[in-house]
Amino acid sequence: MALEGRTAMVTGAAQGIGRSISEILLKNGAKVALLDVAEATGTTLKKSLDGQYGPERTLFIPCDVQSQQQFKAALQKAVETFGHVDIFCNNAGIANENDWEKAVSVNLMGVVRGSYLALEHMNKLSGGQGGVIINIASLAGLGPFPGAPVYTATKHGVVGFTRSMAATSKMSGYGVRFNMICPTFVQTDIINSLTCPAALGQFAHLADPTRKLMEQHGVLDVSRVSEGFLQLLLDETKDGEALVVVSKGSQYYTFPSL
Ligand SMILES: NC(=O)C1=CN([C@@H]2O[C@H](COP(=O)(O)OP(=O)(O)OC[C@H]3O[C@@H](n4cnc5c(N)ncnc54)[C@H](O)[C@@H]3O)[C@@H](O)[C@H]2O)C=CC1
Ligand SMILES: CCCCCC(=O)/C=C/[C@H]1[C@H](O)CC(=O)[C@@H]1CCCCCCC(=O)O
Image 1: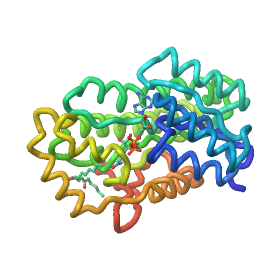
Image 2: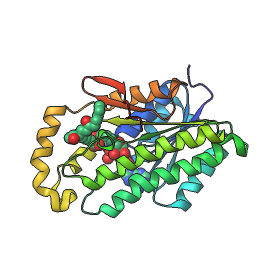
Image 3: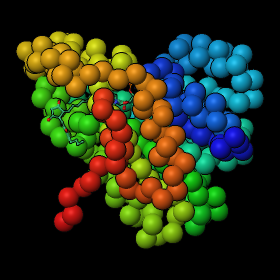
């Protein structure tokens, strides 16, 4: 199997896209540390995966990506259990224009924190074995998404950070590839937040236009993102790339050259 002997960590792994990514990693032979702030959902998932893959293949670690202490301890636990980390996916995210500071904290600061902590273990210059970091951005990381300006800003931030880290890693010799995925709407709980007046705050009047956008763009199954994730992970030529996953297919985004 393509990922036999590899160890992965996925944040926001208890449900949705993170769960689907964790499952495709397991199907392809990897061991996976599942991190999530939702302890009950994560524990239930771990039990179900134990039945399918055996208890030694996964580890559930309750972890809020907003906490440096919890995140650092989670990395430590995964490395102690599995020996090393080869694949790291910063997936945890929320949509909340009302509590927009939390959205910045989870979606952008959480990705920076996760990437830097993962690098401490993966960086070849500090004794690591190298690896791949894949960040889950969004189509809203490449263009404007009306009704969710802060969500959009965080995803643009993830795109900029990931591209810059890819260049930084290459020029420094870290041996770690950085890539991102930019999906359109995907059938998970987060799309309820994008049309929920409480989460939209001052932009609650844009819930209906967002529903219309979903009808126009389509809402994908999570498997479309995890299949893209596997493609991006296994293609060693990809570094600093954004894989756009939309209803008509998946394609690498061409950034304007500056
Ligand atoms: N569903 C969609 O339409 C799209 C989602 N995305 C992105 O995909 C990622 C995953 O979201 P979905 O699976 O769609 O949503 P989801 O709401 O189903 O899953 C998000 C997961 O992240 C966890 N989480 C939230 N805050 C956390 C924190 N502080 N620390 C650790 N875990 C935390 C949740 O408990 C949950 O398990 C997010 O970054 C989202 O922005 C990107 C494009 C489209
Ligand atoms: C393939 C090139 C993509 C270029 C960026 C783009 O097309 C952006 C489109 C936005 C458009 O301005 C209006 C939208 O609704 C698009 C963004 C849709 C975002 C879906 C986000 C879903 C999510 O993250 O939960």
